[in-house]
Image (cartoon, rainbow, N blue to C red; front, side, top):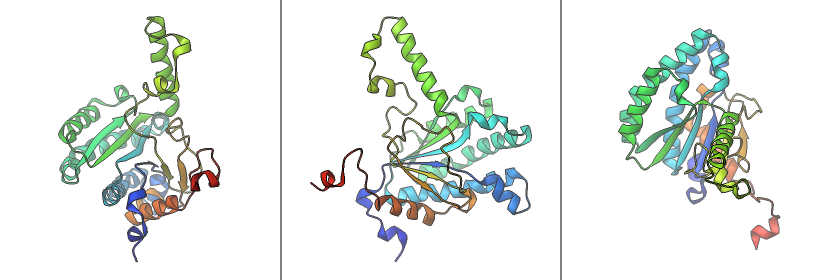
Length: 247
C-alpha cells in the first residue's frame, strides 16, 4: 500500500510551509560546489509541488531566500540569483499544466532586476490558476515582516486613520505578507536542523512541526506524504483538552 493511499485526503493540511535546507551539504557529499546542490534542489521542489497537487493542498510556501542569505559568499549568492531567474522562466509551462499559481512574499525591492522581472512575468502568466498557490519567500524574514507591519500601522495612527487602542490581532495580520492565506498547519524542515530560522514566526504559532534528516535534494514526494501522514496522526488541541475535541 502506498503512503498516499493511507492519507485521508479530506483532512490534508490546507497550507504547508517548508524550510528547504541542506543543499550545500548535499553538494559537498557529491564532491561538488554548493551551487550544484541548489540546482539539484529544484527537482525536489517539482516533486513536492506535484505531491501537493496529488493531495489537494491549497497553499505551499517555500523558504527560498532569506534576508540573512545575503551574508553568504558572493559567488554563491550570484549563482542563486541566476538560478532563480532561469528556474522561474523555465517552469511557467509546468506551473500552468498543473494549475499552479505563483506568488511571493518578502522585500522584493532588494532582488536583482532580472529576478524581479521574471518573477513578475511568471506571476502574471499563472495568475488565473486555482489549484495550488506556490508562494516563494524571497529576501524574506519574519522579523522584517512583523517590523514592516508595525511601521505600517504606526503610519496609520499618525495619520489619524486608526486609534492605538483599536489595533487588534486582525488589523495586525492585515499588514502581513499573506493576509489572504490561512496559517500553515504543517511546517517541514529538512537536513536534521531543529530551528525555525526566522520563517513565518507569527503564522506558525499553531503549526505542527516536522523535522527530517533528509537533505533537501533527497526529499521526495514520498517523504512529503510521510510528513502529512505523521501530521494526521497528531491531535491538534489549540489549548483545549482531548475530551473537548471528542465531545
